[in-house]
Amino acid sequence: MYEATEPSKSKGKRRRLQQDDSDIQVVVDELKQVVEDCPTKIQLLQWTEANVFSMLDSNDASSSPSSQSTLTKKGLSTTQQLRLLQDVIPNLMRTFRQRFNDPHLALFIFKAVRNHSTQSYVYGCSTATYNELIALLWDSFRDLQGIKDALEEMLLNSVDANGNTQNTAERACREAMDDKLWLDRTEEGDEVAMTTLSSISDLLVDLMAAKENRAGMYGRRKRDMIRGVGPSDVKSLNSEKLDDVFIWPRNG
Image (cartoon, rainbow, N blue to C red):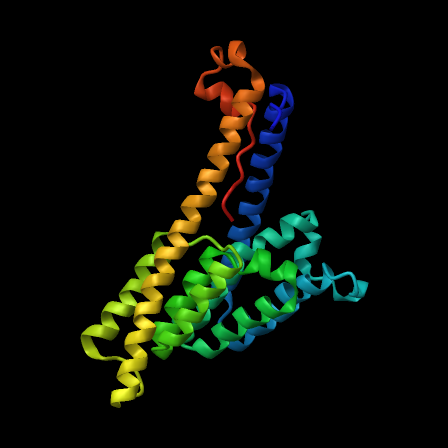
């Protein structure tokens, strides 16, 4: 059974979380401007290697002090630095794909973050990152199998899908069906493509169901917390006060 958190402590924690979000957003905005100001893809890749990748190395226990990136000098904690990846990585992928018309570099960024460490995967391969990956795989490569693999990764690693995930994957399936946009147009190739399209549809259903199940789990935690307060105390708790004594998990 979950115990209620003291309101004063809860409010203090809430304020700290809000301040963390504010600090991170300021840095995210600065980084987006830096990315936008890079005139060439080579310079952007060099900036990424010098700052983003070296930030991952600096948060690796085996790294040396010389691998510190400029991002580590902005006064953010290690966790705050890693949370930057949730916004920085999809923005970098999108910039390489759309502005510089280089989907291969965009895919390189994703794979580098995914394969670097468990920590970089958890923070860097967020819902937004996977949404950008799915758009990249379809718009640049017409890769239905790649989309299926990406959705399977999300399901396996408990990465939430959202409306953008569903819309992008469904758009890929719809366009593929309308114009038969897959490489192998033999009878066998058509059969494989149809099987892949069906799998993508099933995976979207599973992902959205998994997200609802996790939301239901948090709801059960809240109900358990109420029971722990006691019947007489519950009557005095309106929804606003209840939020003060329960720290909700935030989506990444």
